[in-house]
Image 1 (cartoon, chains in turn red, brown):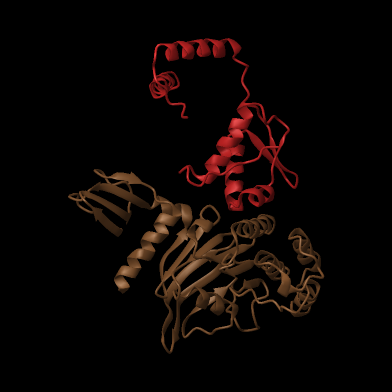
Image 2 (image 1 turned 120 degrees about the vertical axis):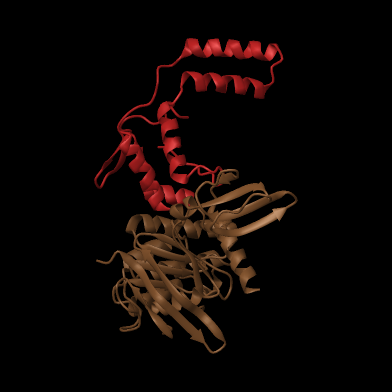
Length: 127
Length: 281
């Protein structure tokens, strides 16, 4: 089961943090179809946030078709965001990073390069 | 069933020495967790005492879950946890629970005992020997044993250490998640309420300065940073200047020419509290 962590200073709305963390766990395969999300009571007992915020996050995930609420039972994962393991792509990226470092590019510059490429190739898909 | 837990119209309380509440009009919808924020003497305790029927207002009216308070004692669906957490020091926890059962017709004994067990407090412990956090958990168990639809807590976290604050808040929120009850919670420490409260009632000088849904209020305000030469928009709550820079909190949408950010609950509340203090001074 997923455990949420709330960062009150991040500037990201609390319900959005819950949504993002759930999606992140879905992408990494830490949550899979059929898995149960913690109940609102369990989440607030661990994080001291408003129960309505948890319900709002779960409604949003439900609207996106990722989870479904089953009456009296809880909220369950209904779709997967896990993607095929990109071994080859990861190795190519690692090699590229190695070269960037060897050529003396600093971290911030590399981040800016990567971000520019992301923005170009994933235009309009949000972050 | 009413959808308004507290409904105040021009509520006024005049003491011999001054005003407790002046012309307060606001509504608290059911199912919300509302922060009650204000400086000392702002009228927070007065408001709670009027809602329980302990005080009779000198003007205006308030309805608690659709009923005027005080007609037949405190509304059965209302629980109130006063700041001093009134418990009998010489009683054991068991005896306090028995008193709770005797005094409250709708007492849910199993529920109150479960809350005590979850707090890890022995039933035979004398109340006077408990830590601040344990006493608060017992007082909360007794308040919730009434199975209220609205619970009002006056500074429940004052005098508690950080771990006890967290435990009290988490146990309260867990019960709210289960029962859907409405909560009105006063506190000095606004950071404690951020993320917990979805509704705000801000009192200063006995008047309602700001109230409503927290997300709505945050969206309706901006912190503006820019040159002090810029013209201020309408709706300024507080404006400060340092050197060439002006920092403004205003009730507005994005204003061109300024750097616009949405305030946090704490920034919003503090700006309103500071601005009313200046007017009064």
